Length: 223
Image (cartoon, rainbow, N blue to C red; front, side, top):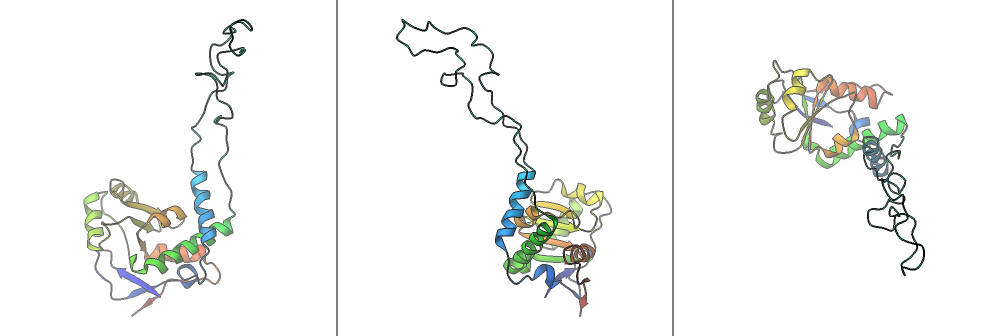
């Protein structure tokens, strides 16, 4: 199994890079594990901003709103009663809730492997390898021209580099649908959200060494 390979200027290379079957060709894809890892990533990135006030946090309501008897109304001790309009909220979010989840390292790496295998099995033609991705300047125009040569601008594109340069990050920051990630910090959300993936040759080597350390696999070339 191999992927279409391009040179650093966007020209199709004469040799194709072989993919590590331990990373891109898992026989039985565990969708449950992928779902668990994806939800864990979203939960851990959630900001706890929701907060409501209980009756003790709302100002006013210190005086009894009406006499206990004689008015024909239901007895009430405060206008901040949760049953009243403008009253406190019962069992609402306090801002101290913990939505984070935990997943062990082995399961996290396995989920990345299954997500990459699912992507390759679903749309292997949308996985591209580039020999090198180095921009001379942080210009969106240069990166846009390169991606246009590879037909990667008409869909959500994920660029995986071994160590993304500041020029690459700055050039892609203003491009809609283009995201950049290093091989070391690749997360499952970016894999799932991407329609096409562009990986540098060195990043492919790093992914194989990280996700499939035994046996060690190195990206090979075949003529």
